[in-house]
Length: 134
Image 1: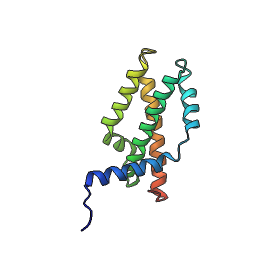
Image 2: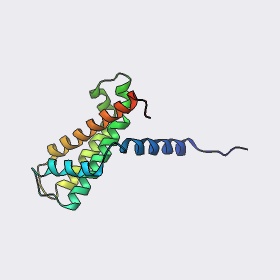
Image 3: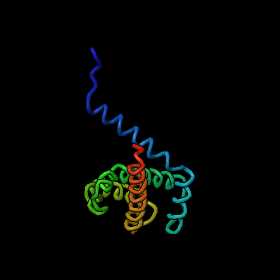
């Protein structure tokens, strides 16, 4: 007899494999450099802030890459973003909650930061789709 596996376990395994492959295009040094260049205008960067921003950037990048398949099949970027609006706004809200401890009135900056990384993930995901690097 064959071994039984659940669909959820197989789906999770497939998702983790895809995320590992997508993250190969992203270097830690580049992330750190971009965090410093983006946030140094608004506040002094500590290791805690750097880690929070890197984590948010990776999550936004993966979200954009995951939803890039809809853009590959012809949907407009705005429509794709509306598909993942709940997760997208959750990322913005979480980043804002962390960052407002150090500076108030920074919601728009957090939203732009998440948007930049979401769009980069979308571009890399589209490139992977076009090159068939699933």
